[in-house]
Length: 193
Image (cartoon, rainbow, N blue to C red; front, side):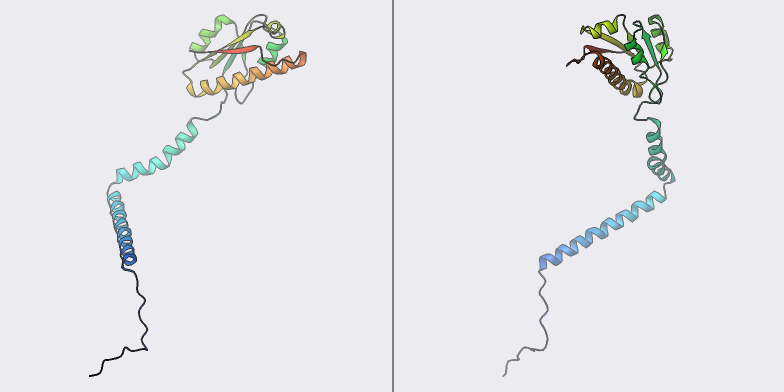
């Protein structure tokens, strides 16, 4: 009996590793499962109109309202200034506050500060003490008091930083005209009510 010789004309099929085939089948099975679950969730969402409305509201109107309701920057914050010094320096500081960050400063007396802040007329009240310019030019410690209405939270914290920068910049500019000083002899005392 003669053994049958293999047919040389038929090419041998490439051997695919069984692990790779099983991994592909497993991946396809997972993707098909995810697809079926996604379709199932969409059908259940289509049957629940209240949930559909809430999802649409959350990703449209709610996002827009949150983005436009609270600005990141200070805008038209009311400020009052108590100028007990009446010097060129205090006038320079008072003239540094202007729109759009602040309203034009109202010049008031120290007795009007609490009533004005309690009534909501001012978010900030800057108190420049007597002999302020003389103390600054003499190199003595001088302090400006800033009262902040903390009930207007978004403006209060942003605005106090702006005011500190503005006051420090104006004092530095004023002092640089008379002498050069390595350290600014003024400190802003922040009082939040």
